[in-house]
Image (cartoon, rainbow, N blue to C red):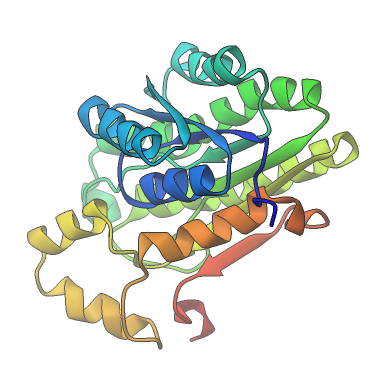
Length: 253
C-alpha cells in the first residue's frame, strides 16, 4: 500500500516538540522527507535523529520564524536537500503572559504577534514561490480555538490566532488558481510542553481546561498530527480555506 506522503517534501516550523514533533514523525512514517525548523536546537536535532534511526528522511534547521532570512533558509534547505517543496506546516508558536488588557505588557504583545502571526506570513511568503515551482502543494497553519471564541487574559495569543485564520482565508483565495491549498487547524487544549508549562504556573487551570471539552480530556499531539497529515495529503485535494477545530467539542458550547 502506497504511503500517504510518498515522494513529498515538507517543512515544519516549531518541530522540536509537541504537535510539530509528532507531525514530523508521522510525515516521515508516511514517506515524506522532512525539514524540522525550530529554535530549540538540541531537541530538534534529537527528533530528526530519531526519525532517521527509524529509517525516515529528516534534517533539522535552526529557525527563528520572526526573521525573514531564517524562514527563507528553512525553505531553501528543503529544496537543497530534497529537490523541491510540497508541504509547509506553519506551526511555531508561543503563549505569552496571562494578563488583562490594561496590564498586558506591550513588549510581550509585540513578541507574541511576531512569532504567532508574522512568522506565518513569512512562511507563506517564502513557501509559495517554491510550491509553484513544484506544481502546487499544501500549506497548513496552526490557529487555535482562541482565535474563534473569546478568552480573557490572552489578548495577544487570541489576536494572533484570529489573524492566522484570516491570513489562511486570504492565502487560500490568492492561491486557489495555482494548485496550492491553504488550510488551518484550530486545536483546543493539547497535552504539549507548552500546555504543561501553563499548568505548572496555574495548577487550578488543569481541571477547568479539561471540563471545557465535552470529551473530558486533553488532545494528544499525535491526534492533531493525524489531521495535519490529512490536510497535507492528496486525500484533501478539494479542501482549501477551511478552519478545522480539533478541540474535543469545546466550540460546540
